[in-house]
Length: 378
Ligand code: PLP
Image (cartoon, rainbow, N blue to C red; front, top):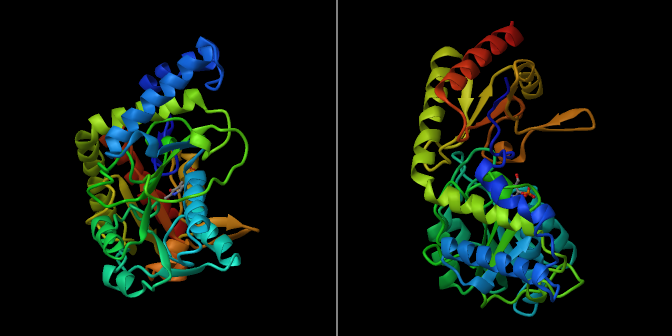
């Protein structure tokens, strides 16, 4: 029996979401741009879900753009805003612990003359808002800081950042791919001008995302073609995917408190048991202001990829922050940025709990880790 503890990587589509999506594959298959009813009704369903998502985010319906994933939303927002506002300035502020969808987009923009400040987090994984404000120049056009981190789960001071951005008249984007479905996000309350989300992180399908962009923010499209998404994102809409994203977000929002309580109970049990039973560990990132289901622990002397492989033999799915490239294990840029030494960054294990995990699975996880760590250390 597979025990899945990698919900930050992706989640299984909820049965209720799948049921809602199914008709749009084979019965309601019309192209939303077509002029006959089979197509027009799909345009309507897209707009119904657009409205539901706008209500959840507390924004206007015409501020929601459907995309193919979180990475596309990040690209569209950063490049679209940067190029459209080039006459106002060329400076962008972000952090060293963003997802590659942000970091690599920033490097791309640097090739076109944009200057990017990459803020360092503190050892707990938080951005210093005073440092952020000090790094603003008269050329700053955009601040992009993630809502919650994908590896250590830390939740950034989004409200304070939004206030600073507003005070200095700078656009504020947040990559909320990990936060959406876990945290109630009201874009007005947080002064967020643009936001990225991705359905597969909250029990929706893969291959569909949303870019929220406030109507006051000038941006240019990144994909040329037809007139879909009010001329801002060409391509025939993924109707089933959009329905799935909307339904999944609706379900997640209805149940957010119980969901967090459930994840927190399992995560806290896991961390306290590992602390008791496994010596020489390091907990990465603050244990407060963190996603309820996230735990990131380094096991001294253990290679993260071997730990994952041993867990896999026991049918446990978990993740190491390190990426393997050309046969070498690269330590996670996020762990290095918060000051985790190289060897410990290579020894990390990210556990991210989800709705179908229970205490019994978690006990099996702890027992397995204890056994594997003993075996690999001696
Ligand atoms: N941003 C963050 C914080 C993420 O965790 C991820 C995916 O893990 C992405 C962006 C990219 O999302 P997608 O997989 O939908 O492209």
